[in-house]
Image (cartoon, rainbow, N blue to C red; front, side, top):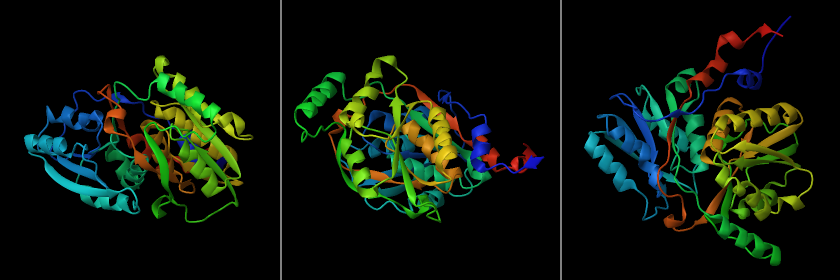
Length: 356
């Protein structure tokens, strides 16, 4: 007997593409790079890499509002001048981000052969908005690739964190400040919201981070009935202390009832499979809300998931303050490229009716 497979079942069965090294990527004049001029060194690493062997391609340079003096827009523009690239500059308002995906899509145009979405300097919400907007049909998936640059070092260090944990244990009012602090708002944009509210019971899925205010704001604002935590596990064993430290900073051992999952901060496939497991298990009776506060590649997984699974809600606790750029990642590590074309296959007719 044949049966119709749901989109999440198709996605679960798909052989998901791995990350590829980004060395020796050559762009043609019909290709486009979307880059966000952040203040980390790795924000412009992919653009510099392709500029060494490519000329004449298009660049969409995204600037943040409010701007930061240390953002690397000048480096982006210098690369474009050297490669004789056409530049389109867009402004992303962190406090009013609704609709930016459509603005980005229009800036890229329909004629681009390949679109490289460099997520290295992007905010988490911007990553998801970009993937969802650009991959809205089969052709969108085929032409889109994610570019990602690892850093050489990821603050904070273990001494800073364990000092903060000790202070939190001694003083419940102590607030640890690492990369960002506070929450401006729990942001919900229409394009990442389901058309129907569905079930009455909310299940919040989130990624604990060093900004403990994000978890506090999400729980207070959304009042979820159930919570699932996806803990990030760095691929480098020397950095895996961070997983437990983040849980301790957020005092997760004192919160009863939630589900706990662990996925790689780099291999997005683990997070995507985890989200599919949660969706398969709970979506019939729960309205699922996902807060993308994990790593950049975990966020890419959320973007791919939301682009195909339309009945989940994305909620993002936008940070209020950021520390000095010197307190963020330093150096440039491995560069990666992830072709997204395989995900368009789940929309194909070959999945419509298969043997049960």
